[in-house]
Length: 271
Image (cartoon, rainbow, N blue to C red; front, side, top):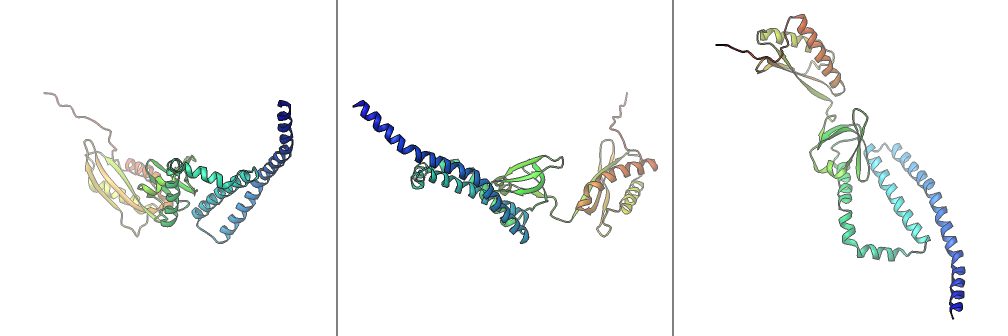
């Protein structure tokens, strides 16, 4: 009896082995071909979007969604070749629907955040944004995350939900920016003299927009210094160069005019 059962099992295995081998070979072939097919489809889609001059963020978001869909299709193709019925798998996933929904809650929030960003366009590719403890130049937006590049070339990956649901400052959106600086002088320096020197620096710098009013006024009488506010308007691309220029130029001009930049000091009186 045992010999008959063993022989029957071996016969069934012998019948199944060609089928299993055939399906395994088919799965391997699909897994080898699919990356090349996906690359071709994504490349074609990218060229079409570039010809239509679509928004760069919409382009990267669409590419990310299509890439994800291709992986999902690959998954169902593989399980179909393996002989697993998709309806059975969906039934299992449906049974575990609550657990799956809770697990994907954050991902769905990020997906919705990406859609909101693309719809309302609070920023676009190349904008410098600041907020929620992050900052950098927007590089691309994907299905769940937005990629930023910091000034020192670090890559920051931020969930779309965080950007969509928190306050973000877009530094690059407007073409001009106001540059605010503070310059301190000693108490024995005449106020008109300081204002004259700072006004001269503002008038002569090529980056300053002369059609915009600039403000140079005594702002604070500090403990050991008079602090002057220096506010001028520049193009956004000139902002940082102008900031560094003024820091250097004002020091040189103060030295030429014998204007002291004070150190912090304490007066001690003895009885």
